[in-house]
Image 1 (tube, rainbow, N blue to C red):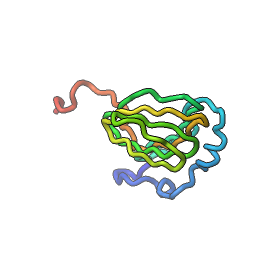
Image 2: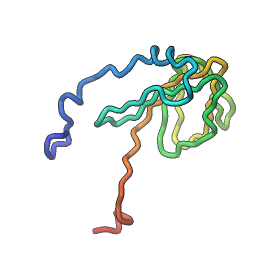
Image 3: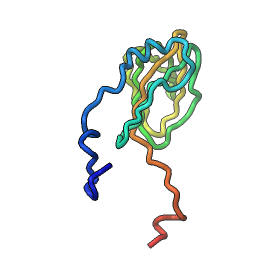
Length: 136
């Protein structure tokens, strides 16, 4: 909750917190199915973050994120990021910026690929009546 009208979160939401051990997550991924191993879920956050695992030879098909820049940090394994300018090797420790509007696909190598993504939080869905600018 926020203080009435102040917009300031309660003090306990303003404290830094250790969220997870990404090395432990990556090491435990092994043959895990593809998908998120961890998600940032703290209330009041301005960011979204996920630790994603792709098993060996799995991929994320070509897609485009029109609105959000994304940082991708490889935690474990290897793979390939393919963009219009060609393939880019992904290895442990590689930090990649995926600018909004960019087209890309990601393929895991023979040992799988575990990576962290971070981006601005998407605004929540709003239910409204027509164009808000038309209302006055």
